[in-house]
Length: 314
Image 1 (tube, rainbow, N blue to C red):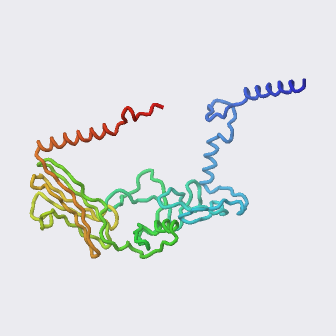
Image 2: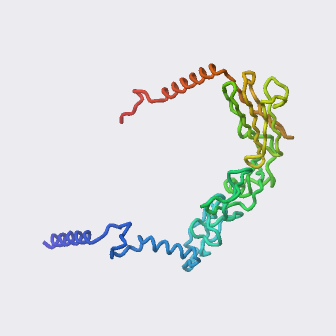
């Protein structure tokens, strides 16, 4: 029965092969003599990566017909490390490889340079120095805002090019922000405070030309703060370019301070406003208000919980 003998031989061969093989170890002790699979030798892979970083990259003969297509490149195309195939350039804000060679992250696209971006949290959107461990990223070489034909202001020409890639009909209108009536980016919020407490209303406005921001109180014709010593107004530029932040501060609030306060922003193209209501309560009124608010919140949470008939038992 030759077929039976062949089957027995096959089973024995498989059994011996399994017993004599390893199951792709990802770690081998330093004191073992067992050879490491080259594909799993991470030290060798690190050495290869170091050789690339040290400009010892070995390039095969270029065959352009075998190159993958570089599609959807919003920051333009550039040649790969071997100068053979086209690849997408990295976008603004993406990590990048400094220098002329694409090693790990890739190189920046058109109009972008690879450097540590010093912009970030801080006065005027700047920070004094790069934080330790910051990686280089693609930064637009031109940081002046531009205006698109659809009336949208882009922070720089690189962001405009990205938008233009998705909308080929988009044109560059002006190399400055789009002229617009003020836009309130952050409006003041309603507040309820106890008598004697301090509070702040915030209003952030974007406009070009720059806007002037004033505060008024409904029913009163005088601009705040007026001659009231416990009300003050402060304004400064930011947090972004062509924006203005303004604060209305009330110290030692009294019941007579209750009312509707309005932030009014205007430039030579028009004006816009946003309002918020302030309620100043006595300690007893504030305690009752907070108790009612907690009860209302609890009812909302209880109502949002699934009821017995709504539970899914599967």
